[in-house]
Image 1 (cartoon, one colour):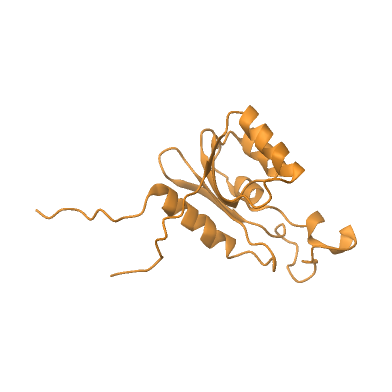
Image 2 (cartoon, one colour):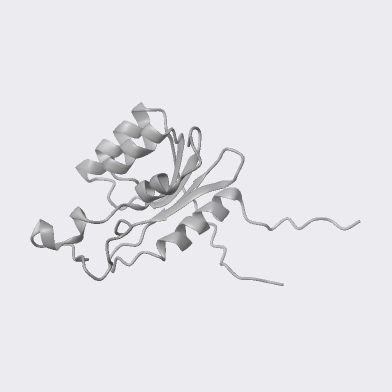
Length: 161
């Protein structure tokens, strides 16, 4: 009998990798964020990325970050976490984990809490000092949502057959 391999990726590496891959679907030229929601028994429940709602053309709405609010992306785009929550059609997300490539904003934090997700694994926290992110962290902590910053292993994605 041969021994099984021991250098396989962890669940966190696997699901953060899925979130990172999802983020690559975003048409946003500045920020690509992905999210992956996972059940307590390690099943992928839903995936999302930041973009426009279904039915709104990526070519007809603005992608810039500045200027008139009706002429920039912020009134029109949906964040990856909310997309993943809304894309789920299977019932409850109670006790699920969401893997997200950027720490959730205050609006996404509300959706995470209300949906019953109990754990957030995030990669970047580049806006940590912004007031909306301080509010986000405050709400998530108050609701008992576990917050875990993803630890990169340095492992590269490569396939061996």
